Image 1 (cartoon, rainbow, N blue to C red):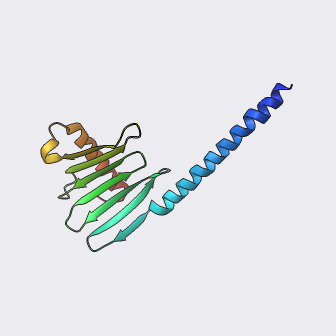
Image 2 (cartoon, one colour; image 1 turned 180 degrees about the horizontal axis):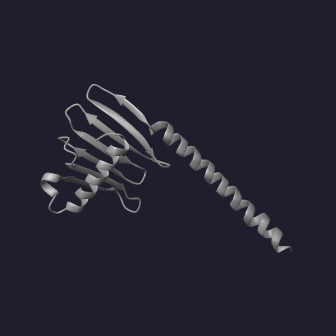
Length: 142
């Protein structure tokens, strides 16, 4: 028995097929995500909405509401995080985070208000403020 032929026929070919199939599937999902969410912009009576794709499955959505509040939502199959700046001052007033947990029932949910939770979660609000500012710049907003 030729060991080189065994490796080629029973290991190398299946690995090449699996890697090729994974690349095709990843490409299809990335293409669909960019088609659905990249550089999308529309207005309604109450808000303006913008979206940009973030990789294979994720995307970011910004809502500029007529009342002056702004929202940034980061979406992916693995988590959802939303920041809300109620008064347009560039500081996150509310954070909503949801992380699906496949190892137990339900989800890990979190909701924080700057007015109530800043002292206990200062680092979380600092990171949220930085991400909020970064996303605003990424979308060409101030």
